Length: 97
Image (cartoon, rainbow, N blue to C red; front, side):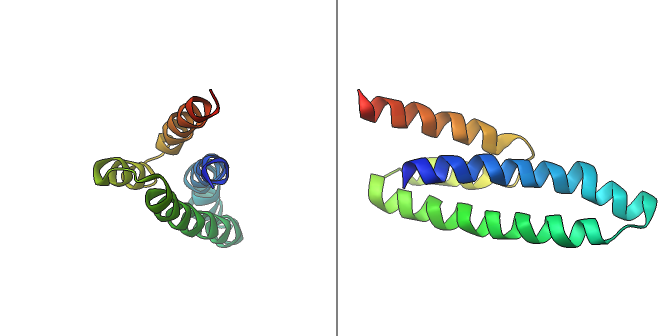
């Protein structure tokens, strides 16, 4: 589940950036609301998957509350899930060695 969480963190970050920097400007500057509808839906699904996988890994890996809270807060900030992905990749690498 750690690898799946890492991939979800990456794609959740991509969808958030697409929503903020492409879909929202299309909606408000070019009157194209469909972009927000579709990108927003994809982002919502990925956000829910991110939170579910975060809780799952919290339980499975006995992560501290502070770590989980930090990872959750990262999901609310643009670019921050890429930091989460890197942290999870480092943990995953340490488990392999």
